[in-house]
Image 1 (cartoon, helix red, strand yellow):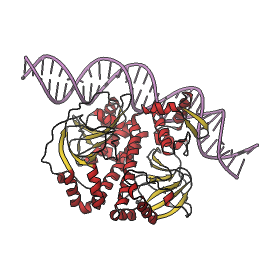
Image 2: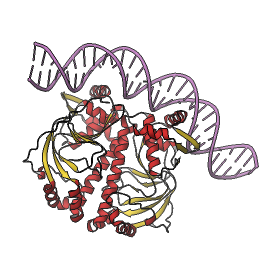
Image 3: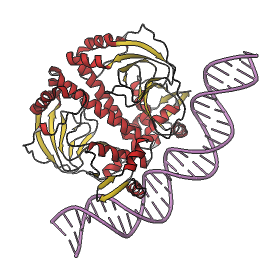
Image 4: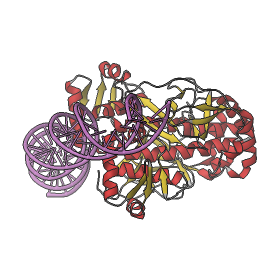
Length: 236
Length: 236
DNA sequence: CGTCATTTTGATAGCACTCAACGAAGGTGG
DNA sequence: CCACCTTCGTTGAGTGCTATCAAAATGACG
């Protein structure tokens, strides 16, 4: 339910990143020809380009000429509604492919933190995919994987605040290395808009979870996941 | 929030359907070699198999050996939670591909009405895709299309009952030919579980929408979408 | 240290859920 | 053809969870 205008300034190009270090390619069925896929993506890359927090990378409705590979920082995809409400559909971590779409972007793509993003020309990627089947496999696997994650997120629609927060924390924890201390790189407002809660409810829920000893707040924006949370969640 | 056991009986195989008549292939980028894709899918098909309403086609966690092409009826994918709550993630109409996944089904696939379903062996499909790029394009386009629809559904998470119902009605209307009279083939319980509402709230919301002249209920399970609804929704 | 953004806490209101009962539709058997 | 039963959908009363509004507390940063 954020109702703020967005800083539209774009920032300069900056080179020197190697795509090979950020594409994990850990999708089933894609690792067989990992080198070829990396080379193919590498040849198409433009950037990386640096974005400041809240900068818009692509607008809802724009032609999807490029798709985005997150190098560092967090990227979010979102949709705004008439009344100013905002839904954040997904967060993308370094190594993730964001903004995959057919002809048009159905969601706006934005930097949720300062971020570095590689641009990949979609038409070129598709054209390579028709010639090199490992690239096609990679794209299919990446899309299938994102579909699964989006389905999981969509299934939160009838769950209460505690379940939504738990699901978010565990998902982020799984994706960011399962370290005991989990850093939340995005704002509470972003998390709330992702979970369909207000920041107040999010805050209260985290407080209650800390009191129930499901989590511990070690420092600002850092949370330790306790075993009890993992056990409790494994039985949903 | 349904808490009912599911009828597990499976029903007999039955042949005589032509895959060409049910695969619309209206995805951007896939129509160029429509014939080849149809032939490829045709060669892999098993069935069609008939399922009665509420029969399970594939279980959450099962190896995704097959994916499913809906020939007639409605298929749903869903997830059950510990407390008996159920989320229906998506409905599939005739011509839709349901249960696409990597190694394991992350959602159970069930018949929401009596339905006829073609089985396609996933491994064979993937293998054909590596040789025939139009098949790979088709799979990618179909998956991308489903991702977009799931993202749209996920963005309902912070919207109220009226918006959710409106979104559902217009989506179904768009997918089922935009006839003035929209038949709801699935039960209110299924719709409610899809929208994260109770059947009572769904019923009350429909009643209120009828009183506001956004819809007209022509007969049981049939609704006429009024222009006012389309206009109102176009500005979300 | 002051300013601004972010997060937390409190009081109140509202929307959707729960529980309950009624009504409508479809199928079965007499 | 009708009585009966089961499933499904509607309506009402009351509760509860989350949103809203407001203000204080904390952190970031120059």
